[in-house]
Image (cartoon, rainbow, N blue to C red; front, side, top):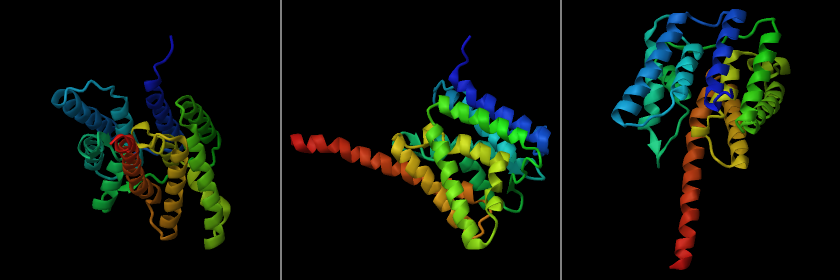
Length: 263
């Protein structure tokens, strides 16, 4: 029996979760992850199905919840619940011409980091000295995004990050390997495989998608040089919605041209 493509990303992100935890102990605790997933699913059910009557698959809500559970670090539990709820709410409230503008989990994380830095920090654990978990997850992840037709976005981001890492090493005096080190952690795996490739919050054109993700990497480099700790999240938070609004506006103008010609 062929597996429904919608269930591929949830299975992959769950694999990243267990691989990251058993290899590097990244989780605060299973209760935090369970709380984030539960709040995300409940919010999506209440708003999407009960209030709006939309029968959507819960795979997206699951990904948002488990991403919050993995990427958020806090000594208390409330940020996991609040971050998950904010992530799902952003899909239904912050919309532009029928599309939500922000990747849900990235939005929830950025709001938490900006408003509650005293209680929240992002995941900063790497795979340690074990290379095999990172290679296995990247191999499976690249295969998954390739099957979904989004591998060009992940590949472009990784290439752009590498080039900007080389530039940063020349500018700061840090070693190139030190600048590349973040890619060995589960945080960047989630970011490169899920956040920047989210079909609902990325532009439709292949060429534009590559340009946007390279811009994300460029903004991230500027933020890193300014010593902004949460550079990748903020870079996507800034660039992603701007790209969607620009694409929508260009499409609207293109649709008006035939009407003007007929008039």
